Length: 182
Image (tube, rainbow, N blue to C red; front, side, top):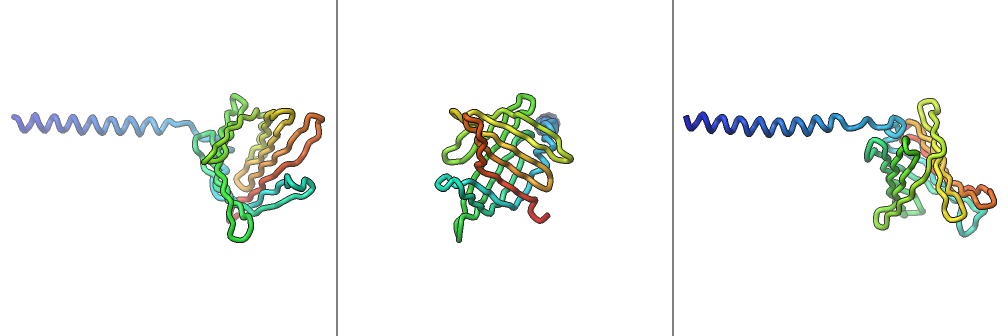
């Protein structure tokens, strides 16, 4: 009799553990589906960063670059950049971009050791074929930082322009990437 009680207690304990594991797994099955436009850009990219030199504003500098993109959440891109900045010199950048499409905002976290967070208002969001084109901006003192972003399974681009108080639009930089191996 004592053996059957022990067996029954062990059976119940095992069932309780399995039920707990199953319910935890079931919860994971109901996480939100990723945004299709964002999930399409997961993977490895090759391209370049072209930027206006702050020291010589008429000069454009282009650095070869690689980009690795993953989803950190259904509406968040996690990006790891590697820039070729000369012989045997690589520069790294880590960024997270969270997209609240319903609320019209992009929250952009840059850097690891001294992270900075910027919030931008989405000014346009358009489906283009199988891709997506976004514009978002924020006021920074008397200027506006305006980003244009194009996302698709084959190409990814991000452009920054500064809009001065007098309305003058100045190109600051552009990332252009193609899917690695494509």
